[in-house]
Image 1 (cartoon, rainbow, N blue to C red):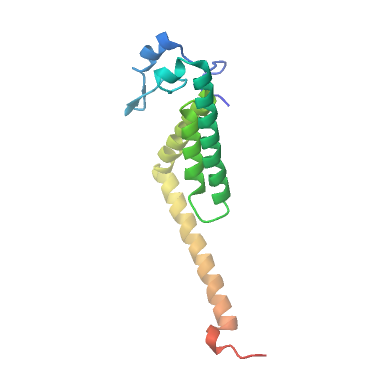
Image 2: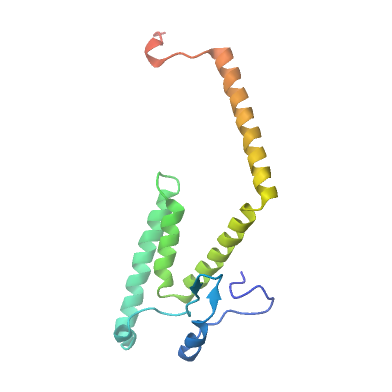
Length: 158
């Protein structure tokens, strides 16, 4: 998975404090500046190693709980994928790997959205949807013609 760029052989590396100022000027798309990689913990927490480690453990546990709830929501009613990505966003406040995964995901979602706006793709999707609805309608019609509609309160005991 290449999360740094589209050029082969390049590797994404966490920026140090000197590079963070330079990276703040780089824009993603045209909307918001790209943030540097690394912890977003307050300075007083980063200054103390034990406090920063416990902060990271807390962020990890909270993010893990949110991701697990999202995974549970996948087969159950609820916005499973949204909750999973919310957990990833929580992790991304502290961990570089989560920041890289979120950047890669945002890039892929943007590419998919742009591709979906292509007129040929839209026409194809609409055509396939209409064909699918016609097939489902025909199957429902055949079922109703063959078996009819029996309301639950009109079913006779057998």
